[in-house]
Amino acid sequence: MDPHIEQIYSPRYQGERFSQHRMPLDLLEDLETLQKMTIDMAKYLYLEKNDKKRIPKNFTHGISFELDSLNEGSTIPKIVLVASMTGLFPQQNVEYFLEASRKIINVIEVAENEENKTFQLPENVLFHFNNLGKKLQDDESIEFKSESTASKAKFTKESRKRLILASSKAKEYRAEINIKGLITAVDKSRQSFEIQLMNGDKVKSSYQMTHQEAIMEAFNKMENKQRLVILGNGIFNSSDKLINIHAIEDISLLDSFDVSTRLEELSYLNEGWMNGEGTVLDKKGLFWLAEHFELNYNSELLPLPATFPTIDGQIQFEWSLNNYEVSLGVNLTDKSGDFYCVEIQTKEETIIALNLQNSSDWQKLNELIASFIHEIV
Image (cartoon, rainbow, N blue to C red; front, side, top):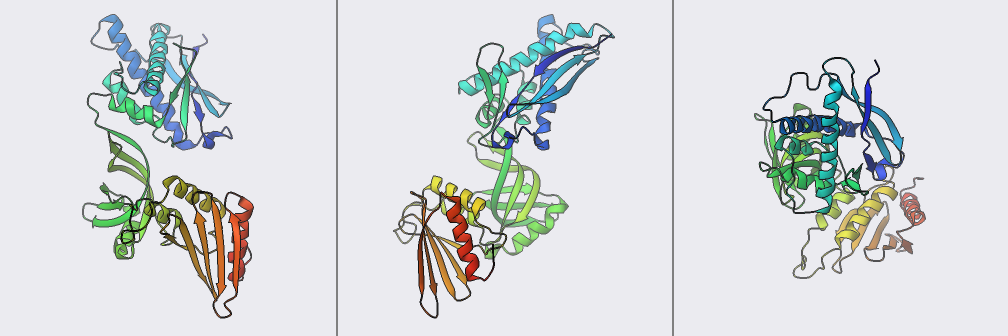
């Protein structure tokens, strides 16, 4: 007898990463989490509707969740519930799983639209939100079709946090981290360390032996401000403060002239940072500059500049290249750049205005820097 098949989820992943209709492998855990969450919710519904205290041993017998296809429209994995037609009436249990998925989707919809809400889900189901969507980035979301309304249930990093903290036991939540900082302490016997983040906060973590070399090198070069970057999963409190590192996926040392790290550091400068003078730098402008520098400057072939703030709240990049002193003053407001170069012996000057919103002007910058070190980009 053919199995009974019902489409149970078709989450639409939205964001730049999914524009080519491909799904990163590290997001496949979401699908497994949806399965576990739905099973736990279905069991809860069974107990509630039948006034029972125990789940029958055969409750999930003949039931499976399967990935049927990956549809276009950003990235949409189509997940079906497959119920075998053999055994002790598996089709009777199908409705519990379908209702479970509807309740989960409806709660996701409420969490996105209502900030202060008590969610009617059992504790063990709410706990699964720690694993659902933990790889989502700031500009990404998962969209579910809601059965209760014509609208879409949108699952974001913010609604995920609300659902996790809705548990009466939860005072913390887990999320992806991409942090930079200095290693200020290491305990090799316990395989633990302390990292001072760019904002000055200190966080402790354990580590695996595979990461010990990088951690020790950063620690030994702490006085020279040798920073590293850690990718993984962190534990945050309800105020979004990182309080611990749950798991480390990758650690790498940063170049001492790394521009995005330096710009992040400068974003924490307070008013009057230079002997009572010095304007606070625009954080959005710094983020824009870090992003565009990363995308457009050919750091594989060209040396990185030293990065400084200016008293009036702008950025100055500086290079010393053979017999040339080179600088690029960046206006964070209008995204313009003033390129200046002086030949040390002849004092010959070169001054060029650049529009840093145009990739062609970044290419011009690459070519200028390359010409001073006699390399072709």
